[in-house]
Every structure is written in C-alpha cells, then in structure tokens.
Image (cartoon, rainbow, N blue to C red; front, side, top):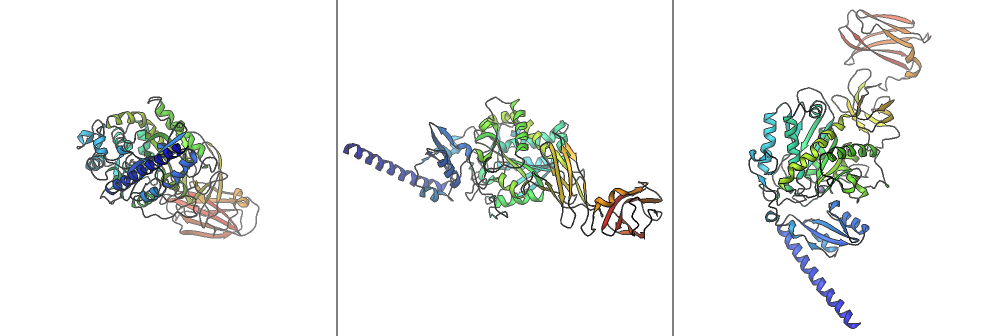
Length: 571
Ligand SMILES: [Zn+2]
C-alpha cells in the first residue's frame, strides 16, 4: 500500500512540476506572441460550458473522444493570468505559434495578377489594391466604404458596396457579408474578394442582376485585419484569432438581455455597429472557419430556453443555403450539427456578434462556418468557392423577400420612420423599422398569414392583414393618420366618395352617410400646404380646381371628431 501511495505522490510531484514548467512557458510565449492555443481535457459537457463562459473558444474546436472533451482555448495577454489561476492541466499547441514556418500551404499573392486563379492569399497591400481596382473598373457598381480608418496596427476595415449605384433608389434592403473577425479563419477572406469580382464581371447572371438592382450589398472581406496580419503584412501564416489588444471580437460584442445596449470601447466592434446602423443593414452573415455549418440566433440561449420568433424562417433559408451547396460539394462537406443549427444548442456563448446585431439593432445576422481548417491551404480555396458561391448569391436575395413598402403621413404624404410589428409573432428584438429618407421598410419573414401593426409617435396605429408566399415579395404601402387629426375612420369613411379621379377642372365629393352636421372640407398639397377650405352641410359639393396646379393632393373632410382623407390627382 505504502509503495503505491509513494508512487502516486511521486507522480503528483512530477505532474505539478510539469504543470509549473508548462505555465512558465505559457507566460513566456505570451510575452512575445499575440496569443497561443492550449488544449485542455475535461470529462463532461457542463465543464466544457464553464470553460466556454470564461475563455476564448471556438465552439467547434471542442472535440469529443472516449467520453472526454478536448477543448482548444485561445490565450492572449488579456486572459493568461485568469487562465493560469484556474489551475487546470493544459498542453500548449506549439503548431499555433511559429506557424510561419509550419504553414507552407498558405501561398501568398504579392501582385494583383497572381490572384488570377484565386488559389493564393493576397498580402495586405494586394488586398487594398484589389478593392481599389474594383471601384476604379466598375464605378457604377462598386464603391469602397470605410468601416474603420485606422486600427491599432494601422490597418483599414473596408467594405465594398455592390449594386446599381446610379438608379437613385433610396433604402433598398441592405445586406452585409463580412469575414475573418477571427483573424486566423481566413477562407472567407479570399471568397469575399472573389464574390465581389464575380458579381462585377457577371452582371448578366440572373441572380447577380437581381441583387444589383434590388439590394445594397456590402462585402467586408477582412473584419479583423490586425488579427489576420498581426506582425507581417505579407503573410497570413502568423494570423491569430484576436485583435491587437487580445480581444476575441466574437465574444466581446455588447451582451444581450439588457434593457439598453451596453457600451464597449473595442474600436473594431464600435465601428461595425455604427456602420450597420448608418447603412440601415437589415441582414448579414459573418464567416468563420474551424467547422462547417450555418448558425442562427441565439448563441446565448438554447432553443429550449428562448426561440427567436423567426427561427423557422432561419431554418428555411439555412436549409436553402445547405441544399444548394449540397449539389456542388462532396457529401462530407458542411455537415457539422447537421449543417444548420441554433448556436446555443451546441454550446452557449456570450457576446457574439450575431446575438448583439439581432437583439439591439434589427440586423438579422448569422454565423457561417465554411471550412473545417481555419487556415485553409491556398490550393483548396477554388474548391470552397465552387461549393459555396451559388449559396452565397442566393442567400443575399433573401433580404429582398417577405413584405416591404413605404410608410407615409396620410395628410402630407411625407415618408415616416415607423415601427412595423408582426402581431403575436414579433418580440421587441425581431420587429423592423422604416428608414428615412424614403419611409421604406423591409421585413423578410417565413410564408404565412400575419397581422401587422404600423405605428409612429404622433400617428394613429394601423393594423392590416397580410399573406406571405414562399420566395416572393408582397408590397404593402401604409399611410398613417396624424393624431392631431382626431380620427374615427370606421364610421364615416365608407360613405364618402370623391370623383372624378384623376380630375381636371373640379372634383365632386359625395357624402351619403345621411348626416346633416357641418363639414369642413380642406385640400392640402403634397407638402402639407393648405390650399382650399370650405364649410358646408350639403350631401354633395363640387370644388373647382381651375386655379390649382397639376399634382397629387389630399382632401380631408371633417365632422366633429371624424376625419376622412382622400388622395386625388389633378391632371
Ligand atoms: Zn470563428
């Protein structure tokens, strides 16, 4: 017995000595590297969840073998001490540092010409040149926007706006693709550039042409340039997960479940939030590596805890994304978690981008993991393009489906910023708003029959039924009546007719409600200027229009607290 105890004691001492040396090594590595991956072995899913709550872990890096869980954790200077304090055994993943030498497959393009076959990674300067060339060569269809002009390591976060830029259509549905917020998950970096190139050079492809004309598409190929090029702008071999300060950008977005969006001082995140709101972006996807799947809201809640109201819509469009790529990829591709999953059902994470965007700023973002290998060998990039590009294009067009329309003031016809709320369906996070200057709103939604309430401060709300069909767009324009026009449309409205419309020299207003009360007739022009008023109790009156210019006008007829509004056209 004693012998065995002694043996265990010796083993324990060796183990802890080993752990001490591993800890020392970890501290040394962190001093000279942006970060490092370590592997930890735990025995149960709850233990994995606990690690995920505290550390930077790509959920899909958790491997299950022999009832043990091997968890790969990204450690930076920010959290190294916290990790050491946990006092858990770990081993350093040496391949994740000095990877410059160990990644001969990450062939770089040092000129734009070398990107011709899309089987290389562009250096940072080639990347900038490519974006600039797109804009120069296709000025009517591509504009480069700046999301963040200067990061800690003097990089830019840029987005190409792709669409018909000269059609003067305001507030098309805006969509954002972005890649590599984890700087070492780089397959999407090249695929996004290739998507821009493909769309600009294949404008007659029906799906491309549909997008160019009906969507404002933004593509940000490099969302965390300090992570992708931490020390050397000419190689992605040394790319790391976090930003320059050591933050995991997909774990540090403002947390959900607060009454107001918490603030953050991480520049990349603030710039992205501002950009999405400024451009009124309604749908988005961010690309990752390390797994292959489509991950919809929520990340913070499991399906059992809280379902997103549009969960079935997400499953439907996720399935479409999956079905399309299934036809063009090996059967082994894109099958993690069945290909389409709620994030929290795998492991719950806090501070994810998609949760924040969905919860606080009405942007329907998803995470798409496109390559099981984070640093995809450059020679394989064309394969991934071929698997995915059709899915990528069709997915963008989902933002132009569902129902949409313009919300205006019923008196002045001015566009309004209004809330569009699907009754018995939306909760506060899933509603949409109409945008100025156009008053347009866009509500992608699963097919079905709904009741929709439109409301704005200072206006009477209006609830209307709507039926949505698969793969189609229903237009529902809505006029809201100002509250200072005390209105009870239901009583008088059906009895009032106005004709002829369009009219030339006069209009006749007929009231067959039988009321003998005094009625005030007022005509407003489209800017809300009053140009005619009279008071009358007759059932039928004729209003001369000889002195009125051609255009659109509104006639209001008021009896006590009743108001009826009619739009007419003077030829
Ligand atoms: Zn990732």
